[in-house]
Length: 459
Image (cartoon, rainbow, N blue to C red; front, side, top):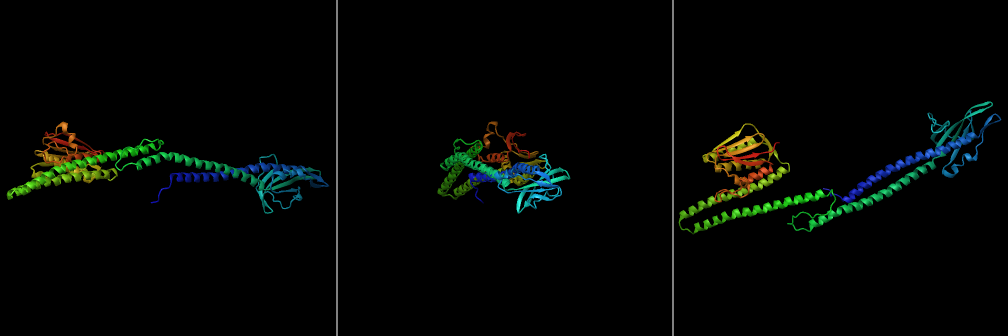
């Protein structure tokens, strides 16, 4: 995976690229605007020269004569770096003065509307150079001579190009200085903006591995404040998770230590007895204790599976499941156990009930609820599934007093400290409900026992 670049470098590169494009676009725009302004300015002078030459036309001995004053071409001598060419054509289309082969207007060239004159402006090539030409028609009304003479004045475009390039260079220079200043400003601005992050990084690196206190309140930009708050929120959740794990390990160690110590003491006493019957009784009691320890270990493993399943649900790993089908399968699996205890296990479900969940966790939830009901009922356990997503397990046992109904979901809580239960069954059910965003509640059953209701969110 390609390593991400520096934030400063990326900003400077993006800004530099944008400024370069803007400079190129502005430079081209300045060039064309400068060329247009140069054409307007120099076209006016070009027309003035043509008018001056046209004013010097006169009839001599029945022929048209052109008196071209020096002033007609003089303005170009001071502000033009190029060359000037002119041509005077009489009413019979004959050259009477000026340069030969000066190109005339191309077909379809329109007369200009910018000046009150019969003039046309056009671009052409003359003597291997680009030239700008004005063609001015001059009416000649003399005795024995009547028609339109034409005066052409051409100028090479060095001056126009120089003016356009000058404007472009000036624009690029100004934009370049502005862009360089912007890049420097961005560099210092980003550096200043990253200083709080550097302080946060240093504060995190200097911490001990088990230090999960919130990050220090440093002055950060408004856009970075949600990041700091999110990190503090994540750290707080991580700290609570570690505390829960530590408490769970401590409780599990306590719950395992007592039966293991009792089992060891019973075996030691049995080994000291000389009678074989005492040995047999000791082994039977040890087997029962081992069964209880195995059940406790399985319950602890179930809690670990609940945490993994909750993580899978949070990461989008939930599946679309039929709660009715799950309840039917579990009821059939536990029917032999209910029959062996002399208990009736019934399922009430009329239609499929679909929800999003993790199948292993839901099976664990059903198994714990039914197993708990079978352990405390007198004769009947009812498993109900109702739309849109309600699961009920009801028994006719002694029930749970109101003041204890909240505590039964705590880990290792047992109403009777001498009971064979682990105190984890309803705690596991509560964790699974939390992972599925479901709500669990305890109610009085219709036959006087306990009714556990789990309401899943609508999907």
